[in-house]
Image 1 (cartoon, helix red, strand yellow):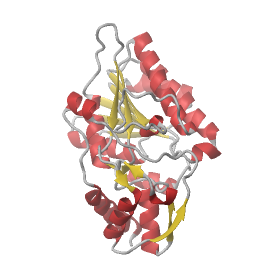
Image 2 (cartoon, one colour; image 1 turned 30 degrees about the vertical axis):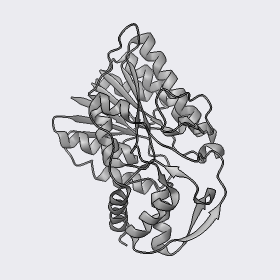
Image 3 (cartoon, rainbow, N blue to C red; image 1 turned 120 degrees about the vertical axis):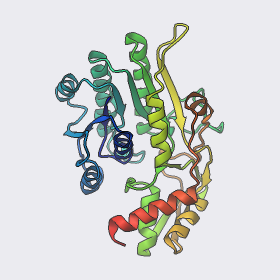
Image 4 (spheres, rainbow, N blue to C red; image 1 turned 90 degrees about the vertical axis):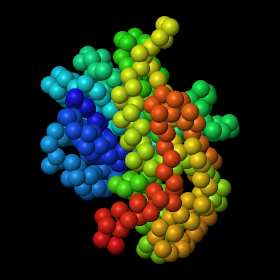
Length: 325
């Protein structure tokens, strides 16, 4: 079995590649453009955990480069595609929307077209809980309306879902979108709260608490995300009753945590109290995320359940080791 993983030097991408290689009998074709949205050194360090392993081949490539992507698909003839490459981050999309259009729209179009021209058994791609916007009904269900995004990042992820549906309908391309909910854990992103808060607490610096702490997030541990991704990959949508082979799943912990409780869990893992400054809500942010995971569990027999305290202990232990703290 040969699996193409885009965004392989990213947080989730690295973990997915590692788990695929652990399974045995899997060749992983890894793609990443190694952009500098955050420290490229971290991306190289993630790749270094994979590059000596049998069956792993890395290609530095931007998915927005159609000729390069088309040549790779033609040469590799992969069985499955796990598409995780994207310009991430809600707030940065306000500052640099063109980066999101290039990666999340043009890049995703290229991935869809490459999968059509070089048919694969299943395309699994990353969406985001951000598509739910300020949805007032909780928990968030895949059947909820998601046509009122509050950030451009969320708009591009909603666009990915309808783009994928069109290819499933037109070309019977089996596609599944995964709405990730606040993923955290070892090798995580330095622009996200677990890293930012851990770094500040360990250095004795101030953390920024937005919306005065009145927010909830469905924090989802990386190992649970990877388990869900790989189970879904093997659960190929067939389409029935005239419907295209297309599915959407939430992947979240089904347990929203108040921001102040998350801070306390981080403090406990760090062994010291945070110095806090309180701020209003940021543009593009939402007060709560909360995943209904019943559809995922019914389909693949699994949904995330790692307790936040356990996950943050593991993250802080990794952070200390990575930085030699």
